[in-house]
Image (cartoon, rainbow, N blue to C red; front, side, top):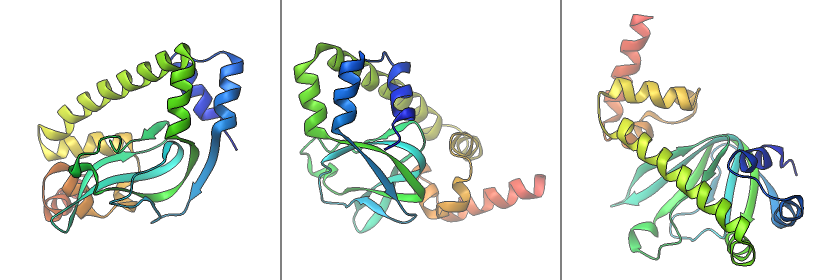
Length: 193
């Protein structure tokens, strides 16, 4: 297992004493997945929290038979599906890998036990959640308002190479526009360059 990126990420958000860090790492497992691998099937609750070292993952929801893209996750990010909620709208959430990926995973139960057993770990978890909420809020503003071109620029800046590995229909779904709108935008950007 290669936990360096995971530990660096945790240290940047408050860190842990060595004994607690060691306890956490003992509960973690390495994961590695090929392109086009579904790591969370829609309709199944994930037992794990995933931290991405490399790769690109797409969180999606089945909605009346169609896939609606909810998020993209890349290096130094946690994959989250909101599956802790037993609401039916979260039961159809899945996660697929679009570019060969790897990272660290820990059982949600183990994460919760560490929170229950150690106030420092609970505080770190709160910091991580708070930072994730701030990031989500700022990305939501960017991705849900403004011109599609600006939104695509922001997404490609955050996830270089996304246009080569994710179908345009999924990117369009994320922005609430058609696949054709994304294709037209890509053609326009190529003509400009």
